[in-house]
Image 1 (cartoon, rainbow, N blue to C red):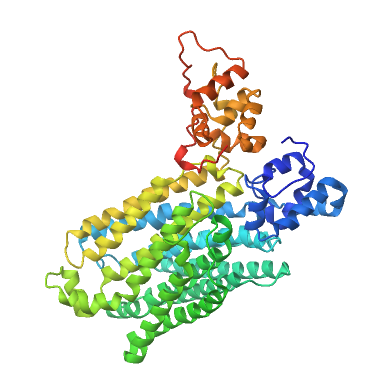
Image 2 (cartoon, rainbow, N blue to C red):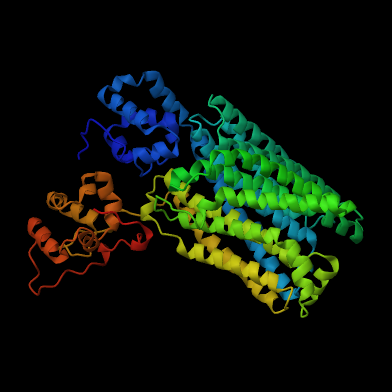
Length: 634
């Protein structure tokens, strides 16, 4: 295939299309390509682009072929509007949100949390630290880690899902500064609330976040309405999530104001925390984060990874059940704490059960039952996240059994375990349930989706990147240690120090992941042509793509032997540079040494006098590990 092709098919790569026919870019921009992957777009096929962006592939192929045959069919107005619509701020605004989210998680988020956990481990009690320090850290996690990533993703992806443009990017940019100020000012002000100026700073910070979230909702709603497209099933989850985002922000402001009141008696503070803090976390985790991930997942996971979407009726019913259950969970908990009685207790248990059954039912085929059709490094993060969601939900519904059956039946308990039996609540078990969903589900889903989206938006072929197994292993190991050993503190004090160490593993994993994505957003590219020098002889360990570039005469030989993807110049420069000649020959049942000899002969290369091959450390592209990609049949 050459750059002079006059028709396109679904399998054609976008960079190859745009390299040959750049004038068709407005057609792709109309369906959401704007600002994605640079001038040549991401390294994906037309079929994949259509699936991800919700376009009929036959329709887009027909439009592209018509434009190739008649370039004048793209009007000058569309060409100008396409150029004007590539507003740099709207196209790249996600970067500042993602980068700020990474900064938050590596400061007031995971790092501060790891320090707090080490202090808890040293003191041997989950209630030994000031509640305002813990809450300031929790606030940074929800608003600064989850909130910033959700907002950045929404500003970038939601307009493209509806084939429209972001409404008022300038206001969207303002929400960024309000949120960043709010997160860090709150993290500074709340722990020092006893000093009036810092309490005022914390309250102002929270107000700034409420304003920012209100503006965020307005911008997204205006954007969706401007598309003129009807709402789909997944949109209901997204809109409900954004409503909970605003609701929890207002609730959080009131809770902060009440718990930092001057002259607060310890008994009063304990009452406020015991009655009103858990419902706040429920609105944040089950209302905002869970519904947003479900909404995005319903739309994106089948398209990105080929995962199965749940039944349409289950989606509609599930949304109503989840919204009612989250509101019921928060309301019934307050009623139970304030007034007691079987009605509130029963209502709380029913709400928790509904959340567990519905969320597990909607995500069942994204986890252990998943059969993805697309091989991608992000799939393992998504599947592990769903498994952690199911674990957290099982733990949630088993909480009464643990509190009222398991703990009282055990004779040998730690002091905290005996205290849990006395008050009917285990801080260790409750915290483990929260950690399983916040880190195991929410954070792993953020890690996986960002690892997929960021390279695509920056024009980097994901197949050339590291598989991220190290951060995957560290975060999952840390989360498993935290959940299991935190529960273990109810039975033995020695579990506290082990629990404290778990946070360091999670921080290390997220740090490696964050540095990797930051480099990509800063312009780093994994492969440079100049990095590999032409050798004096072809060997079986050379990459196929490099062989063709070094010795063009080898291309007809390889094509004749069935290496069909090498017809594409884009694939020769990307995927084929990760596949060795030995591996490709094995896939085609060819004798590797015979193939090497034939290619050397065609390339006019004589064998070294001593029969040895020239050794070159440059021939190995260390930016790509064989285990990082799914090797195609070349």
